[in-house]
Structures are given as structure tokens and as C-alpha cells.
Length: 254
Length: 259
Image 1 (tube, chains in turn cyan, green):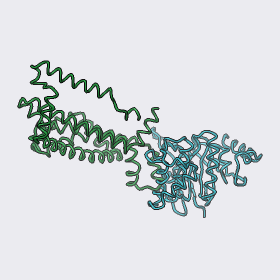
Image 2 (image 1 turned 90 degrees about the vertical axis):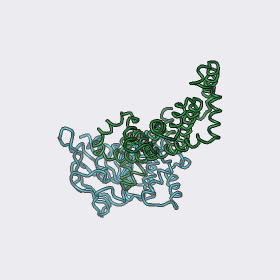
Image 3 (image 1 turned 60 degrees about the horizontal axis):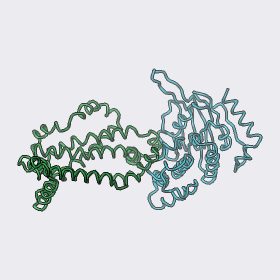
Image 4 (image 1 turned 135 degrees about the vertical axis):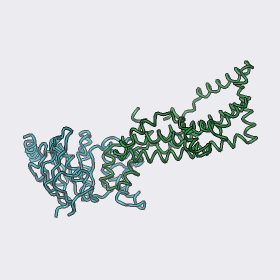
């Protein structure tokens, strides 16, 4: 049984003029435990709407989302959504350690051991020495690391990521991609990732769903054959990598 | 930040100079001394009043009225502000009422309060609460309405209940605004307490100042004014100290953004 199932999901909005526009048109897919799966699609194709609906933060217009056999009616307890805008979603009044502890507290972990655990998570995302800094004292890449550590502290079985590296510079981005893959390999979380960066999706994922323009539909499913652990140089240099990239690009731009 | 902590020599020097000017000016024009006695005379009066006791009693009464009025306003203003900020429909229901009542000078309701509550403590506290609640309410409301939507969504995706989102997300996120409201409220509360005491009190610093003026005892009157001034200064300082401690993160963030 898949850990996460999306069944016939669609979402439309009523606009000011009274017309309705469809953001998502009938999406069905399933994610298995431990997988790293990505949605890739053009900007403005309703990706965020899709992820918000899966996270139980938006009610779909039709269809349903099932997490571990339970239909999603509100935010499910075993799933967390990580936003692209770390600067808006981190708590400015909490230190790095405080933000990570928030994830533990939300899970119901009380004071005993929480401090140690938060420390080890901070170390895991490579922020040792910055425990007592506030988020706004850190660079964008470091802030997103804090957000990732906070999400992992919650110990979600499914981690949804909405273009988490979208606003970072290219080098920081590659660095965080590898950091994420290492964490994923270590913690065996299921990750559902969204990006408009085709190569990022290929580099990270086991499987990719290619989304169309609005109202978004899945137009293709692609299995990524590369062995793990992957490498920014050799994996991307693989002749097959470009083939997949071009294939996806053609499908999206059509 | 460093600028703020430095001792302001020039400022204190010019303040001292002003006092000196007062002293010399008053001494050189004896006709003026009935209205503006020299500082030294005011200080002597203050010392005598303190030793003999009356000032301490008035001081305690004013401070306790102020504290009662202020803390009631803070509790009322913050909770109402959060409720109105959170429930938009409730806010539109009372929006007009707020807009009509708020610009009215609060002292105008003193006669109404006297009619309804007499001239005791309850009247003075009620008037203070009425005036002080506005800035706290309006700023809290503003703070809650300006909260980044993503913060609340973050709280939700981490499975927080409504109540926990209120305490762990909304309240801290709105705290800079709430702090501003609470600080404005301080001076308003002190103004209202002294004014109400002047209009309809038989005790308190406001009453004392007016009473000494009517007895043509200007040194004592100035002594009373001095005490109110120092009280206002101390209250404000204490608040800033406390705020700097609690809101350290915010001051740091603001300094960074303007740097």
C-alpha cells in the first residue's frame, strides 16, 4: 500500500469577476514509503496549490488525498510541508536551536532529551556553532537548512518540499541538494518534492511526474535509473542525464 | 544599538544648564518668584514634603491607580486586539464604533464617569482604562492583521491546534506591535490618572498639584509636578529595559535591516 495517494484531485478558484479558473485538473498518483519523488512543471502551473492540498492546508474542489490509509481532512500528523520562503516561515523570535526545538515540541517531545536531539539535528544539517544565532543573522542557504532541520525534528513520515531551493544561488543549491540526499538516505523519510528545475528533479529523484501548464495534469511519469549515492559531477555528466532532461523539456514546452 | 547605550553627556549637560537658567532667572526677577520659585526652593519644599509624609501618600495612591488602570488596559487591549484581529467579521462589526470613539479626547468622558461612578478610585481607574485601552487595542489588532500568512500555515502543517497557534505563533509574531501599543499606553495612563485626580479627586499627585496651586503655594506645586515628571520618566525607563530584554530578537533584526 502506498504511503501517500492522490485520487482525482482538482482545485479551482473563484476569481473576482465570478469566473472560476482551474489550477489543478484531475491529478492522481501514489508515493511509496521511502521514495524520493518530484513534480516538475512550468512556473505558475499550480504546483504550490497542489502541495498545499496534499498537506491538508487547502481543501480540494474534487478528489481526495489519502495518507497511510486515512483521508486527509486537515493537516495530517505524519506529514509536514516545507515552504520555499524560509525567510517567511522561520520564527524570527526563536534562535536556530529554538526553531529546531519547535519541531520537536510540535511532535509532543517534552524537555527531557529535546535539547540534545535539537543539537544533533543542527549538527546534521551542518550548522554547528550557529545554535544561538537568530534566523535573520544567517544566509539564505543556512536559513533553509534551519527550516529543513525543523521539519526533520517533527519526524514526518512524508516530507513535502515546495521548491525549497528556488531562491538560492546556484552553488548553494547544489550543496543543499547533496545535503538533502544525505539526510534522506540516513533518515529514510519519504520525500515529495516540487521544482521547476528539471535537472534538479532528475538529480534528486527516484521518479518524476511531469506537469502540464494550468490546469495542471500529469503528462508523464519518468523513472530515474541513476545509482545512489549520486554525484554532482559524474551523475550529471552521464549521457543519459541529458537525454532525460531534453525529453522532459520537450514535454513541458509543448 | 551602541549609540543608544552610550551615556548622553551633552543631553544631561543642556538639561542641567536649563535648571541653572531657571534658578538664576527666578532669583534675578523677584516679582516672578510667586509663579516660578527658584529650583533650590522647590527642592527644599520637596524634601520637606517627603520627610513630613504627604507626598509619599499621594505618590503611592497615584501609582496604585496607575498600575490598576494600566494592567487592566493591557489585559483588555491585547486580548480584544487579538480576538478582533483574528476574527475579521467581528472586526467589521465594531470597526465604525472604534473609528468614532477613538479620536475623541478621552478626558471628555471624565464627567460621564463622575456621574456614573462618583469621585473615587473606581472612576479614576475606569477613565484611565478607557483612554489607555485604545493604543494597545489598535496596535495589537494591527500586529495580528500584519502577520505573515506563511507563519500560520507553518504552525498548521506542524499540527498545532488553534490555541497553540495563538500562543506560539500569533502572539510572538505580533509582539513588536503589541510592545508599541503598551509603550504608548504608559504615558496616556499617567496623563489620565493625574488629570482625573485634578478634576475629581481628594488624593493623589494630580489632586495635590492643583490643591497647592489653589493655596498659592507654588513651591509645593512645582514639587508635585517634579514628582509626576520623575514618575513618568522612571516608568518609561523600566518599560524600555524590560522590552529590550524580551524583544532582543526584534531590535537586532531591525538594526540589521536598516544597517
